[in-house]
Image (cartoon, rainbow, N blue to C red):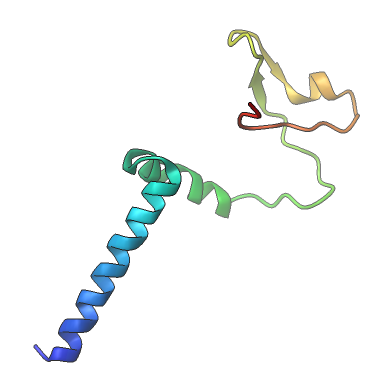
Length: 88
């Protein structure tokens, strides 16, 4: 094996390990990074929503954790903002 190929493979391996470590750090843990890559990234490539298009009529759960409702039941044709995450 030529030295250039050998060092190229080593550099590629270091980049892959570094990217995995950085993604794990940003996601919180390796388990969360795997979940993000496995579930979130394919979702980002699907869909065709554009600015001004109607939101999909998804089923959401209220803060009590039990009651479910559809987006259209609560919006009544008015603008609606959904916040995913914590603002504490």
